[in-house]
Length: 560
Image 1 (tube, rainbow, N blue to C red):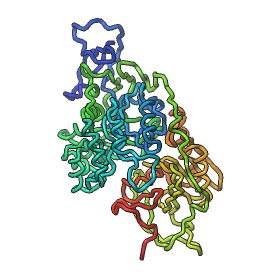
Image 2 (image 1 turned 180 degrees about the vertical axis):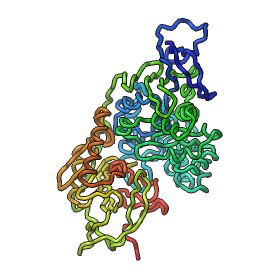
Image 3 (image 1 turned 90 degrees about the horizontal axis):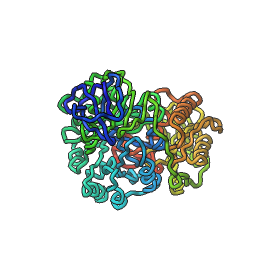
Image 4 (image 1 turned 135 degrees about the vertical axis):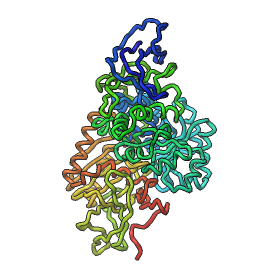
């Protein structure tokens, strides 16, 4: 194949040059010097820019709500040709069966999917998950050719405290010659110990100072812009010509709705260019920088001997469009239309994961010893919560009753082992009135999480999720107003991506319209992070209310 009439973006010299590109057997042969033989197929690029395929350096496919084949169908037209995926969501629910499902479901896609073996299943010992993955289980999968290393090490406390089981996991990756991804939210003195353990990346930077601290210690910074977390613009303030090669782009958690509406890594590149980043530098962040970080020497650049994963862009300005997409020399998207076939993988071993015992409306009663309580405060556009306090109303039996203040109940229902655990707390910032919302997507152990202002609606919402096998639901006055089924581990569905995006938009609109949830808060994306105890400041699990600063459970009541 010969691509002619194109402007090739050189990510090594950071320049653009004009040449024909020759491709054979899915690999780049060269730039069309006179001694090349005649090509069997000639493609006229019509003066467009030819750039390497984009690489998402860290994500969870499960967060898209889509099966891997449907995920590929949405991101390929956006120009994403390679992803580094940590499947710790489905592994927390299904164990190695979940990991094997992801391997099988990503085997023959036009999208190159590399996996990391999850390092924190469960994420912490402070919740019940569906599985436990230790060093022995990691060792069983770490040497697969599409496994790049160990997934994000969220237990930074365990790393810095040199806990044996945590260090044993790190050693499995080191002994296999594989890399280790990071997830650090501690304080600077402990960052030295975290980096010294061999952890190479971090996607949890929120400020330019965070970013510079990581780069100074030799880490790669994965600038995140997804559905829930919007860190890219803040981090770009710390990037310059001297450190840009340590900067990558990632989405982390990106829902189908977001991809349909604004794109994927292409959106992140456009945002960087709009913020003043040189277009070729922005493209490097999405291509060669990621390839260098993850030792993917066969891609990330338009150069002889590399995979023919490339895009044709309309321009290099902030409004560019991805017009054509090729992976391994195959034309897989044109005019934002997916050209490849869509496959389906058996979900027999990863469906029906609902084992809830002893559930009824009375289980959601919140009996308090004092009306002075700790409250989780939601920050719009962020998954970070603040710990605040409030005085609430109690009936004569000490049972919480909603007053006029914007505080409602939140509960986490254990769904993996039938323990009957329900963690109860209070949350502020949803502006929810007269009903309940619930989801089986609750990072990272994915128990059922529900928020509401009355016990009956909360119970109805959870019961509906159990019958569906997982998903999302809105309930008001004892009636289900809207729902989306997620039959794959309670996390994903095989429905087409556009249908899922439409359903997600519908259920969010229903929650806002019928329950009054604030327009500044994505109700379900926010709710599903309220149990993630490795993100500040206060979260809730099926075992109770957890304070990250104290790294321990705290009572709901505040002692006077």
